[in-house]
Image 1 (cartoon, rainbow, N blue to C red):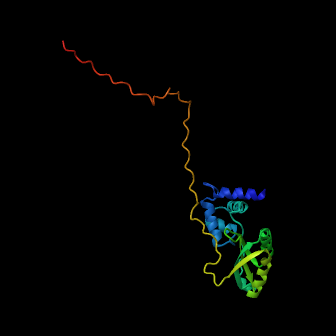
Image 2: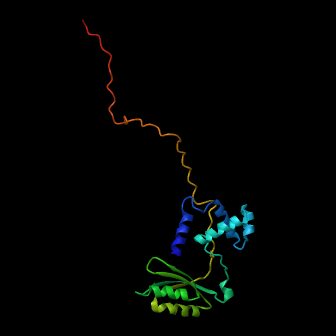
Length: 207
């Protein structure tokens, strides 16, 4: 399946000595700083050719290392100044319907399956608190909701930190094998045999 293939590719980037090498780390750092940078400008910053950089970026996109380049717009500019996080505890048999409803509502910007007594954590945006209540009423037939309205955001959404170097050191090279014909066997091992008895010099017998 394509999803399984992408998971395998992503696992390869996380494996020791995988493709997330120092060059790819530098590329991710530059793309974090400016996602709109052109491939030619990115190539100049890392000291590579544009085709080589393009191929590396495309491979990371196909593997799911780079999941997208998104545009962040202030919710207030869209007329949605009220934000809230809602925990949802579905009633028996309603779990798939809650997930489906969250995917259908455009006011839901995030939906996470979580552990604990509640099953879902969703982020909702609305013009007013009254509109927020209307959205929550859509979930009410499917389970219990607990909502917290966002007052401020000291840490807004931000990219994850990119390591300063590849996350795994390369494996040390294997020692070269000796060339030439095989050496003859040294015979059975002497290990485990008792030490030979010490011979004492003969003593003169008294006449």
